[in-house]
Structures are given as structure tokens and as C-alpha cells.
Amino acid sequence: MRCIFTAIRDTSLENDGEDNKIVFNLKKRRIDIFCKIDRNAVLMMQAIIEELKGSKVRERPVTVVVNTDGGLAFQGLAIYDLVKNSGLKFRTIVLGEVASAGLAVVLAGDERLMHKHASLHFHATAMQFIKPKDSLEQHEEDIQRGQKRVINKLYYEITSANSNLRTPQIRRLERNEICITAEQALQFGLIHKII
Image (cartoon, rainbow, N blue to C red):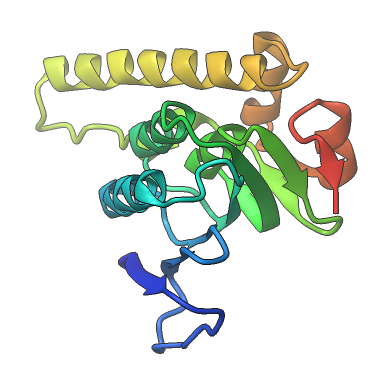
């Protein structure tokens, strides 16, 4: 499914039949991410952040509600960097499930909240890579192995910097594909408050 962008200029939200989208409300300074984290999502976030930076009310925090089963790891890192380097203050809220690349989006928030019945799903960050077919050359497998190492290192750094988890604990969560509750996320320091 593709990710679409809907910009809302007032308090009403019109449903255009798509349930896989990013919705932006400039007046409320709110972004709802309900889609796969991919290049389109990065482009939309970049456009939204530029519009927010141009608004007159820069000091009010921007709320980002995230409900995604993840997406492409490098694109999650791109959104993390866009948010962190924007010069704006962000509040991220976990609603429903956030998995995979969505975790980087949540961890970008200066203030991180999670609904009581939401969950964070850890899995190996490099699951997006498929094993090369027998007909592919060995160097393609080596390239993928190198990309996996880079992704894992970056995600471990981000998670460690924004929680009290250390790399061995993060590896264990990923290896066992652990889904954690809001209470566990609070205990691990991944969030600051349960809604």
C-alpha cells in the first residue's frame, strides 16, 4: 500500500477512503503517521517540517502520533534525523502498534508518550533484506551483510541514546521479536509517560 499525504488546514478531518496515510494539521501542529515508513513518508515529513519551520508559532511543540508496522530501516533513520535537526520541539505518541522503522520515528521525540494499550514491536532491523537467490553473485550477499551491520549499529545507537537499554538488551529484544507494553516501555526509558 502506498502512503498518501493529506494536509488539513482546519480542525475537521475528511476521510478520502484511504486508511494508510500521513495527516498534517498545521493549526493543531499535529502529524499522524499511519503508513509504512518509506521514501514517500520521508519526503512528506520533510515538506511538513519545512512548512512548520516557516510558521509563525515555532515555540509550540509539534505532536506526532505514530501507528505503523514499520517499513524501510534507512527511511526510519532519515525521519529521525529530519526531526532531530529541525530546530523544532516534537512530542511523539505511540498509538496501537509501532514496529521496526517506526521505533526510530518515536525515539526522535523530545517528549515520548504511549497509550496504555499500545505496543512497541522489536525485530531484527535487517529483516527487510532478502537472501540473495542462488543465481546472484557472492558480492551482492556481502553488500547486504555490510548494510545490515550499518543499520544495526545505527539503530542500537539511537535506541541506547533514547532509553536505558544497552546493545545486548536491544539485540535480545530483536532476536526474540519481543512486543513490549507501555509499562515495559516506560521501565526501559523508551517513553516518558503513559497516556
